[in-house]
Length: 400
Image 1 (cartoon, one colour):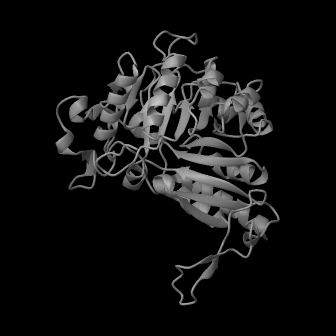
Image 2 (cartoon, rainbow, N blue to C red; image 1 turned 180 degrees about the vertical axis):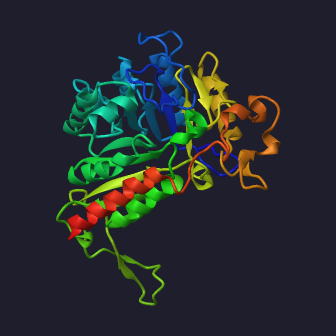
Image 3 (cartoon, rainbow, N blue to C red; image 1 turned 90 degrees about the vertical axis):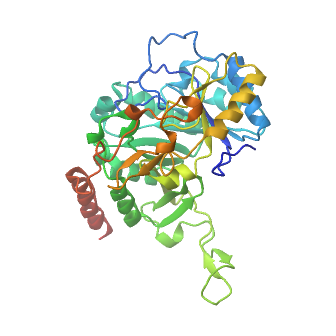
């Protein structure tokens, strides 16, 4: 297994199969590349089926054990089932999709080897959904979620980007996954560094605080040091959400008892899970990143936030893929906390040792990097105040 100079082993790859999409989401950054979309028809510059499979076979040589297929909308390609079927043994296969093409294909995808799916769903309100996605496909997405569940892909993770236009729907989405077994919610912090419009950003810590108040149980996920909030279903007590209510012994307990009962695994028929992905200005997130990205054109990318580290795999022979993969991993650096550091005023700026030169010198593209002066994450954001204050009142009434 390959690791960078910061001890981060690369265990997964995120492969963009196309930049084409049948949505036009206002927050989309196209895997950090910006808006490169063109006609919806297949294009010659996309990696071929054999190219993708060959890359995965080489990645598996380096003990990479997970691949997530993304886009654009990956299901615009008709060869996704074949790619999944030919993915090397030992690699967990997942996909991020807008869900509109899952009806009619979900079962075939599962038969091919798809194990998990993330479906983008930013609101349960039709008009807001249409405004955010620039597509009137709300019903198709809901049908896609049902198709994924029917095909055995539970738990289905719903991706919701949290920003000015969607923040007000967070409580409703949390209630939705808590009430519907088989669903999980992944709240994704809006990234003005690569998507622009810093005025759309909200203070994600306020969402964390609100979820902590609602949760029956909070746990940590090792990847990116993420928190998971378990929301009890209606009528279920906080102590009743665990598979083993007696818990398991914790030999490291520090109360002198020689061990205390800790909660066992959560029973997902009793609670819904909400997770927050919060990479913005978060050195801990970057320090725990274990993925390399592949663009639809066959470039390796060590960091989502940067485009100055793109490395071509040439004609995508096995030798070229191996060499480029090794080089990409060797040159990876955490974005926040290493590539970007705090200056004397507390603002983020490019670390001077990465200034100058090209991709091989880890140079900075100053226009692609946001600073605190650009971002609007005011803790007194009235939108966030209104959204979560109102929901607290509703929740209090319900509890009574």
